[in-house]
Picture 1 (cartoon, rainbow, N blue to C red):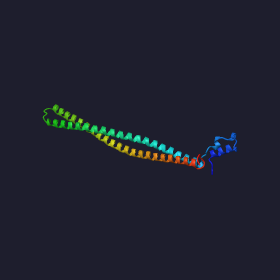
Picture 2: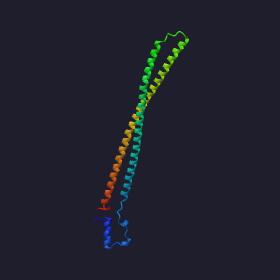
Picture 3: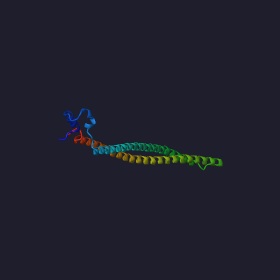
Picture 4: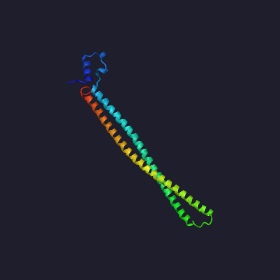
Length: 191
């Protein structure tokens, strides 16, 4: 039967085979084999890499969430522009209808110019409202694009985080298994 280094040191000490002055804790301390040490180092490196991947995934998840929020905000702003300016377009259309009812009654060039200015003002307001509506539609499209991109990035980040956590769990299991083997293979504390 093989004795552990601790037991061997204790037997030798009590039997008088090992002088007390020459005995050190290092003589009796269990030593991991080179294979176990290199395997542990490799598993720890894999764990560290997985931990970095998890951190990167969490950062990407945060960025994706920010992009989704930005897209949602853009969509709300665009929707507000549409609603506000649809009313403005309708108001200008009504102003035009009212204005043309009174056209054709001018008797002087000054009155014609006044009618033209009134129509020109209506057209300017109407055009500006349509431009703001176009801007609103663009904001909505851009917002939808940002939300879709953010959701895609979020899925990728969640996959990265899950993969990293799976790798970390595997590394933790392997480290525990290696330590257990070390303790029970005749080189550790248990025989």
